[in-house]
Amino acid sequence: MSLQGPILVEGPVEVVGDDGTTTRSDRFVVALCTCRRSRAYPWCDTSHRRRKPAGPSGAPPGGRQPQEGEEESRP
Image 1 (tube, rainbow, N blue to C red):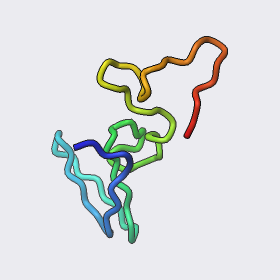
Image 2 (cartoon, rainbow, N blue to C red):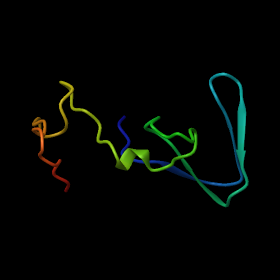
Image 3 (cartoon, one colour):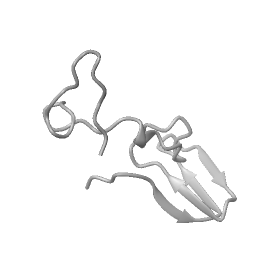
Image 4 (cartoon, one colour):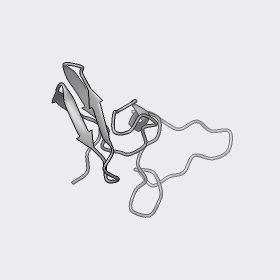
């Protein structure tokens, strides 16, 4: 399963990490990171917007790498 963004969960929320640490949020809605790029993991910091996932060959979706001096196209 491939997710394109965070999972929104009604709070308050407690998340237990793989290492056993517990992180808590008292907010009424919490965005949980699914891409693991967030610096605030397990909470989403919208890092998924800055970098698109690579395609199966390591190339971005569409298969073309931007050339030097060329900006990435955005949908």
